[in-house]
Every structure is written in structure tokens, then in C-alpha cells.
Image 1 (cartoon, rainbow, N blue to C red):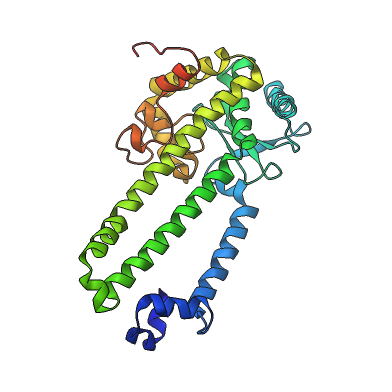
Image 2 (cartoon, rainbow, N blue to C red):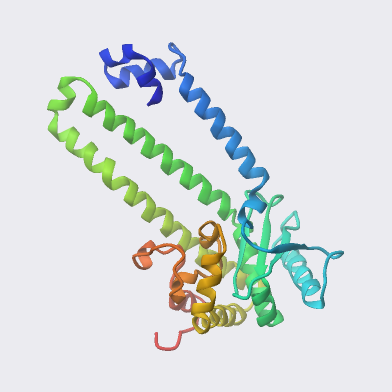
Length: 303
């Protein structure tokens, strides 16, 4: 789009024809090449520093057999290693412990080799070994199912579709007179231009919720028991409910929480701790707790 405005001669021809000249490099798309280079550099930096980006704003340290400072930390590493073998993963994910009272955990990484698992000290201290295994199995299932890569690809694809639609929108609105007179096409493109971004967001959130169900199922497969994960989810939810005001201050006082929200095993918003504004389950990154328990074969009290 920027290149179209950099070349005044494009104003005399339909926008789609001008785009064809740029795509075929009959006219050098200077702005596109610059922005493309910036995008590649940004993606490369994000890929190389993804673990630090996901942990930004938190106090954390990596857990290894050599760096473990307590029996609990050594147990965390051992549990992760055992389940990594059970999940048939080729690489051991990095294990991080976040110094925070609230109970939560997440996994990240664009590949098995770059994967990480992070849990909070609150979760480590309040779950028993079987519940900890279930949580780690859930996070390893995200890695095993390539959920991070899938989410990234879905997001990139949706953005490409929106960019193409935006180009079509501009081509019809600012193109030749014949296109402007075709009210049917104009109406369809205008509707898509404003409705498709909303539909895209809803589909990405739906994908996120489905991947949580899949990770829960993967945890049951790895641990061969559905009870520990259900107990862990209930403990995490109950802990957030009991400490709502305290945890709200911690979440809001920690930068970049919005980056981690989708990755967490438990969305704080479901306990009334809002990191970002939400309009109900359809705009939630996680399924309701009652639905997750039902999928695990249990029923929440009052459900």
C-alpha cells in the first residue's frame, strides 16, 4: 500500500493493475522490501529470544540438575524429564520456576528444541506430586502437539487474508468507475472488510480453547489418570478465587502478563481477575472450568 503512494503514476491506473506491476517487480517495491526485511529481522529476534520474551516482567530462574536449590525443584526437573520420555519428545524443554505466589504454568517455543515450561513457585508448593505431573503433562502436550507453531501459523495466515481483502477493498473503492458502479461487489467487500477481522479473532480464540481441551486429553494420556489434572485445575481455580484481590495486584503489577495469558494453564479472568477486557466465553482463550472438568469425566460443584 505504501508503494502505491510512493509512485504518483499509480494514481492514473486501477489499484489492482498497479499491484501486479509491483508483484512482478516491473517496478521495484522499495517500501515492501524494507518492511519485509524489518519483519524478517523481527521474527528472527522473536524466535531467538522467545523464552526471555515470555518471561519478561517476572522473577525467574532456570531449573537444571545442577542449579536445583531444593528437593521440590529437583522433583520438578525429574517429573518433567520422566514425562518428556513418556511423550517421546526428542529434546528436554528448558524448565523455569517463576517466583510468584499465584498458581499457574505455561509452555512456549516454536519447536521441540526451543521449547520451555515455566511454573510458579505457588503452584510448585501447593500441588502434590501427582497433580504436578498432570500440569507438566498438560504443558508437554502443548509442545508435543506443536500448538505454539499452529497458533502462530493460523495468526499469520489470517493476517495475510485480511491484507489481501484490504487490497481488494481499496481496489474496488478507489479503482475504476465500473467497479464503483457494481454495488453488489462493493457491498460484499465492505461487509467482509469489517466483519472478517471479528470472525478471524473469534476463530483464533476458538482454536485456543480447543487446543486447551487437547492438552488436557494429552495430560490424561501421559499420566494414565484423569483425577490428578481435575484436582489440580480445581486447586488452581480455588486458589485464585480465595486470593482474588491479592493476585489481581500481582498480575496487574507484572508487565507483559497479556503475552502469557493465552499460554497459561488457567486464565485468571475466569476467577474474576481481568488482565484484558473480555465479553464472555466466546472471547475467552480458555474453556470454562466446568467444561474442562466435564471433558475429564468430572462435574464441578454447582455446575
